[in-house]
Length: 350
Image 1 (spheres, rainbow, N blue to C red):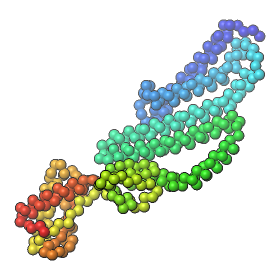
Image 2: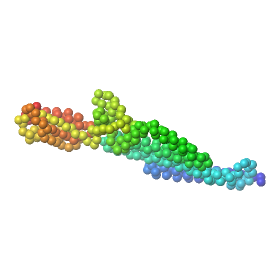
Image 3: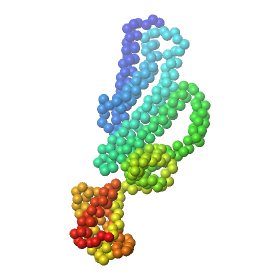
């Protein structure tokens, strides 16, 4: 049957129009779904929303065009002398071909939703006005990066295996080989796996943060880096210590939530304890009234009592609860205030 040129042109124009309209609709719905999943306003110029929507639209265009290709050819009256008939091609496209497109598009959408959600969480934490917002943001970025990479790897691997099965490729040898390789890697990298798992729980449980004053396995210093495999500590002399997370057996965080400035003060033994206590409390109140140190002091000075007796003196212990990492500054300034108050009240320091 000979085809009329006008009918052929109309058939293929109708095919392209239907495929284009379907692709545009799917792209619009995909953009709305991604925006809703990420809980953010829809921005047409945002590449994070535009790229997955464009991919979904392209996949829809290809599928719709392939499905309507057979009817369009018959409507145009064209005679295709090929080994594969339009009906057989349409059947495959509606079956395995459509499933492959759905698998690839779905896996990509899942990866993008995870990325957008993780970024949204990071931005929300970074916008908080908490004192440790910076460290919480670093912790959130570390955890989100770990989760994104893990989910991306799992999603791509599962999607690839599903596509291979739709192409009638036997995936049993692949799974068997992957299992053997994974077993060999697991035996050869036990220490690495142990360090990574320990680092993951170290970050998730918020046991340590960058900038904390800590003692790790008997070494004191400031935490400079927290990685999935190691913790980097710099001591007071500037020496850098690197601890594998799996080998951290003793961890003392000296700046978790709050800290104490503790002083043991020697006073001449002939002074009465209530007189010394009143002087120490006065020194603490003066320190709290200072605008530069007042916010760092969380509670009034606490006189814990006599700590020890020595030759001609008594040792009185006091402590002040402070913000993290401010205890040393408060200790130095408190010593100066105690000296001034003792001189004003005639109390002899040993």
